[in-house]
View 1 (cartoon, helix red, strand yellow):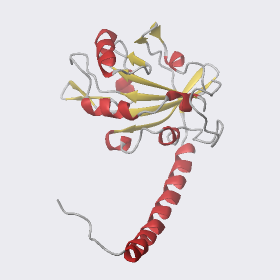
View 2: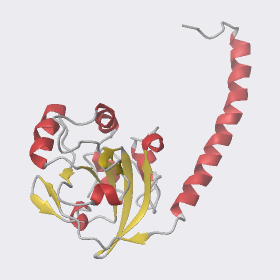
View 3: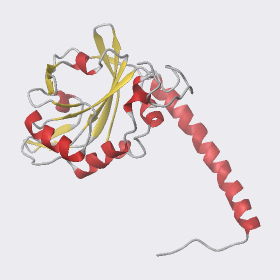
Length: 214
């Protein structure tokens, strides 16, 4: 393993200041890209998707739990698999306390093609309490690019899709797959994918997660 060069504190400080300029440029570019993402057009979702979760059957509107936005993690878990994808599991392990998203008008849920009877024991094994739904009886994963058909066989891939609600109308605003999920997991990084962004519901007023009024 190659280790960094050993230098004096002065040389380290000079190198750090030079790198900081590039980091600040990258931050400005990221902020500009996030602003472009918020300006993307949106598409109304007309299909009547049916999911199964802990409270039984649910529609896409139900996954919002009354909030303005919804972020769905397309968790790779095919109907014939005994357990969920290790990579998707690591992604869910990184998701912070959902109170911070919910306080900003945004719900989060995982969705997989596996039947809920397979999802439930795996969810218990992983110790997760976040909402997780089965789309086994619908084309939800295919319609949003998380299940591809290759040589007549379904192929799973991880993804994230964002939705916006206006009363009872639901709109698809953004999706990312595969490498597009790199670096995601924190509240801010997830909100940056949404149409309303991280500052639309309280800005920087971060609180202890048990002090939010949902």
